[in-house]
Structure formats: C-alpha cells, structure tokens
Length: 492
Image (cartoon, rainbow, N blue to C red):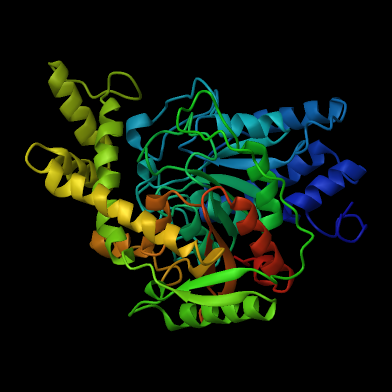
C-alpha cells in the first residue's frame, strides 16, 4: 500500500522518505519485511551502476525485519524497522570493516559503534556498509581501494567524499538515510554534490566509539537523509553522552520542534570570505537566491567577517595528517587485517604498510609525520594549533551578533571523475568552505538549494554555535517547506 496515495504498487516503498516509512509501518500499510524487500531489491538493481555499497547484509537485514514483524510494537523503538546504511569506517559487529583500504581487507568487526548501536536499539536495521575514500581521506570517493562510487545525477562525476557511498545511496533512493563521518567536510560536501541533506554534528555530540580514527580532534559522526525532518529522527536517536568515549559531551539532546513556518527573529550572518574568486557562478547565484528566500521568510540578513578563514586549509592539512600519522600507526600487519610476509618484524611493518596503504593515505601519513618530527613540531603543528584558535574565535565573535551563518557548501558542483587525479591541492580546495567548522568544532548542515546548467545539485550550508543542531535542523526545515529542491531525485 502506498503511503502517499493509498493505492497498491503506485510507489515503491524504498522511494518513501524516512518519516513516510515510519508512518506507513505504524499504520500497518506494509510490513517490515515488505519494506526491507523493497530496499534490498532497489540496492540489487541500481547499486551495480553506483557502487555505493561495499557490503550488503541482505540475509541479516531480512531476518531482522522478520523478527521486527513478529515482535510487539514498543514505543521505545521509535525507528522500528527503518533501514539505514553505514559508512565503512564505523564498526558493526560481525560485518566487514575495511575503511576502504586493502590493509583491512577481510577484517570483521568484533563490536558495534555506539552511534550505530543506539540506532539499532531504536529499531533501525543496518542493510550494509557504504564505500568511502580510504580511511576517510579524500573528497571524491575515488581513493577507495575497492573502486570509486558514481554520482547518481551523472555517473561520470564523483559523489564527493569521503562519505560518497552514503550520500549516493540516499540520493539514488536506495536507502532513506545513511551514516557518514565529517572530519573536514565529508558529510556536507558529498551531500551538496548529491543533492541530499547532510548534517555534521558538533564535536562531542555523537560518540566516536567504534569509529576508526582519522583525526581525533576533528572526526564527527553525521547523517544523510532527504530532508531535515528525516535527519532529525536519526540525529536524535544517536546523539548523547557515551561513557565509552571520553570526548563525548554530557549535554542534553534537545527536542526538535518543526512547528515553525517562518524565520522571523532569526539573525543570519553571511560571510564575505565564503564568496571567493573562481567560485562557480551558478553556485553563487543559487546561494544568494536562497539567502534572499530566507529574508522573505522573515530572517534578518547581516554581513559578517570571518577573517582567518583563508588559513583554514593549510591549518587543516597540518593538523589532520599529524593526527592521522599517529592513529594509523596501529595498522602494521600484526594486529589487524592481512600481513605481507617478510623475514623480520620491521620488514613486515614496512612491506605491509607499503603494499596495502593507498597513495593518498601514504601522502598524509608522511606529511603528518614530518610536521610532528623534532625540529619542525613548533614551526608547523604548534603554529597550526594557534591559528586554529583564531579561527574558532572568529566564529565565537560572529555568533555574538548572529544566530546562524549561511554560505555555499562547496565552490562548485560535482566534478568529473579523474579531474583532480594528479593535483592533490585542487582536490583539497574542494573542502575550502567546510574545513573551518571542523577546526572550530561547530555543527553544520548542507541542504539542496538549486541546480546548475548541467542538472547537478548545489548545496547551501548553515553553521551554528556548538550544540545547536536543533537550530540548524529547524531552519533547514522551514526553508525546505517553501522549496522543492530536496524532493527532486536523479533518474540514472
């Protein structure tokens, strides 16, 4: 039974939004098994063209759905039977955990990440693990050791990264929601490229326990969905203090109210530093039009300055590789994954890491190790941390006069696969508008705000003070109630 129209077979169940699925299951319009079968059928039919998934747990997901149908409905399981995909840097017990790398090929996770466990406790069913740039290092999902993911709006283009598999799966209507991680923009940037809603949470809002670390002071768990309302369902279920993660914050998760129909009283800051030379004209036009739309909804638009934004890119590419070099030292062929054979222990280390790590991971480990080395620590890493403080203060000062910041998510729309293959710096520049939020630890969200002349989605980014995900989601929801960009789906 179609939740949208009440007629059978009019709309495939996998095409429904998360909230529509929730409503349909509660009313008994369809069973958990029927919903899961529709989801798995969509994945089987369309993922060969996308390569969004690295592993699909079909039998396990179907068994979970059958058991859900047989269990009494509990109010505590608010997301009962809703399917979700998980980026393959988050641990799910008894499922593969590769991080898109050959160095973890064949590794099976022995436990479940807290963020995923909370969603399972709320009733969600994991259908599989999605593709990612190796160890979440990249902006295109081309760095996966298992092949790139394609953008469902144009299969010749990238979906963004590093959470490109999750973004593409949601955009293509294979799943209604998926988890990603955002270290420097890896939820918001692919959300913009794929035309979906992508929420980056405040650092410490969602537990990092069970997330394979890349940058320990930067990593956050986020969510992809079709709308802010759908994203709020997932966010509310997985957020909160976790005793297993010392960096998780003991801050109450707010109840998110979507009753508001306008933006009256909201002060929106527009930073001139986020409108740069070389920015794609269609992106700038769409973002400025969206800001005008917010003004028509009652928001007060205030020009602001974030003067240290220009330093975010070099600061990030010192701090993140430095943390990566430390975190990835554990992958040596002894404790995890496959091992290259050699005569001595040191040769095992060298050979395994040399053969199994990809080029981008190797590059960042080398940069990070150099930045932390004796004689260079103060000159590079120490100075980067000082500048990070200045970037954080820019946001603190801005939020003293505005409630929210609005800007483009990315300077351009999705690029053709291979366009930056031999130019790492050009690839790094894809995250120029998303990096500052990670350095400051604040939350952000990307929502669709238009299309360019090639029919590719354009992303609008909102940034808010720490722990104000509720403000981000409420503002995005009001905007999405008067626009239809988020309802459009690719026909690939």
